[in-house]
Image (tube, rainbow, N blue to C red; front, side, top):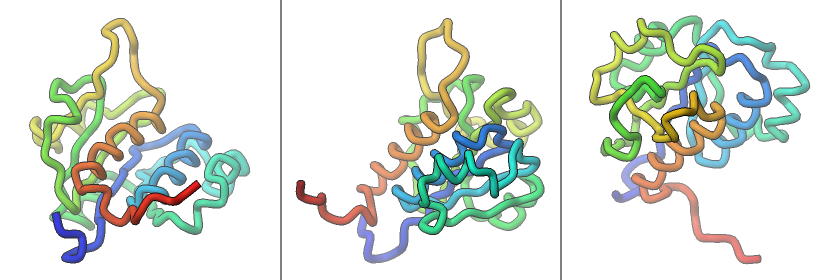
Length: 167
């Protein structure tokens, strides 16, 4: 993939996030990967909370962050974007799809995950799973975003990363 033909255009979408520390960590992840972060309301915290700012470690000025009233609002604003929904309810492993520039990755709230109604909006081939031991319920939200985000970015040849830093 030739990075000179486009800018990296990948998106993390959090549906009703509840824990400011997780969202703060995800802000940092998005800033470091070059992804945009979209928050679907309601949020379980205020964006001005000190817990969120502490977890984000001043990366909020480096991240592109947008709020949306509903998931439908996000989809209407960006109808050309494919959306991949990550959930323990899915069957297709997150490494199976071929991700493309412009894709979005949707994650549910920490306590509830994604509501069943969301899966009616997402094609089955875009419903992805992060494998784990069968007796476990779920991974931490920020960890899940990191796993899927870095796989998508890897498939883009880590576009925008630049050369490794020395020392």
